[in-house]
Length: 263
Ligand code: FBP
Image 1: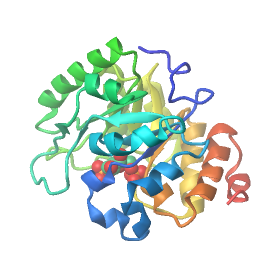
Image 2: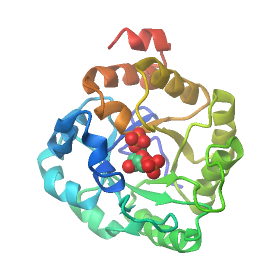
Image 3: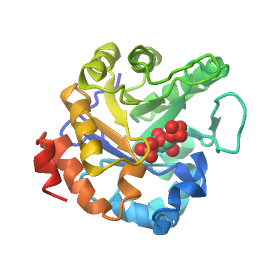
Image 4: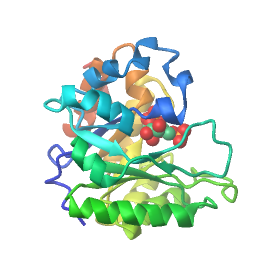
């Protein structure tokens, strides 16, 4: 396992990954509320905020914009991803190799694993190749660990999320990105199951300032090292102020009230 504290995507052992692969994963619908976010440059600018320890993007967006932001933004190369047009069993195409991501300048790599999908075996084999290549380049590996597929009725069950966190450890991820299971206690179970693999909470669709900050606080109190978030930041009209609030909760471990006062 790669020591996480030394990793370029950690700030004082904490992490805030801004995710911006939604144009691929979800399509234009995610940009409807704040149409400027259709322009990747808007989100790269947001990612220059001090609170953001890495920006997760797909290959094309990294190639087009990272050269202009390499001094200000840490690049997390999201290696696989699939469009919402795909109607098959959950699966994710590997769109760039670790070698190429390293050449582009990646500071870390990310990989989605759909445990429970009929494609799980193939995805695990692809993850093995990526994880071992990442070790050669000394790049931390973040697993988007999202159990889903026809056999899974409820992917938000605490046991399922704890299993997802454990799957990340077993397969060699340094960081597991998992959904919030609904309470700090249940998140703690996932953190415990992940052992030395660090856990970050996955953002999800946009909620109110208070609700989102309370959830993040619950995750931090449970021992998660931070957050990987997209829509709850850049679908807001004031992403910079909201990042100020997230910075307070994640890095300063303030109360939700204190964080809200920074918006
Ligand atoms: P959000 O915070 O907007 O949920 O982004 C995190 C993320 O993992 C993105 O990287 C990805 O595009 C999206 O969620 C996928 O969400 P889902 O698979 O649940 O539709």
